Image (tube, rainbow, N blue to C red; front, side, top):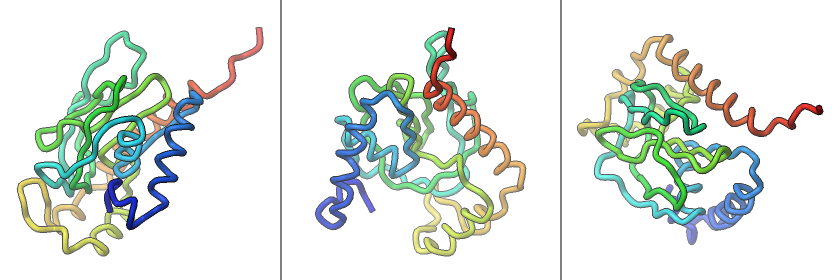
Length: 182
């Protein structure tokens, strides 16, 4: 499915309208994979096929943002991917992660909107489910791992990306908390 499939999936149009309105409230917005693409498209970016599909465990590089108040991903992290499209950054967005296969791996707009092309929420069970339901996509291209490679990830890899996801959620929710009364 693509964010460009609005005629086939009419709910995508309503979703993009909702994202546009909600992101303007200043409340936290996090988009993961299709969600990041929906944010990008909603706020003026363009979504299109990436030169490479990324499926499996591949590194991303966090782009330092010293002193900016932006969220900082690790300098290098091995994360889980399952995507074939990418996007241009919407106006006002700052790239916060990249990889050799996909330039726009993550972006941030203001303090409240973050889009991730990759999956920090992945667990061993969710990876297994994706493989079971998407085997036909595991074609052995440069950035597409085999079922065996994907499922061989040690528990520590899941723990690490889930820890980073927790830090990201803490960052977003911190901005959503009401200020303490004087």
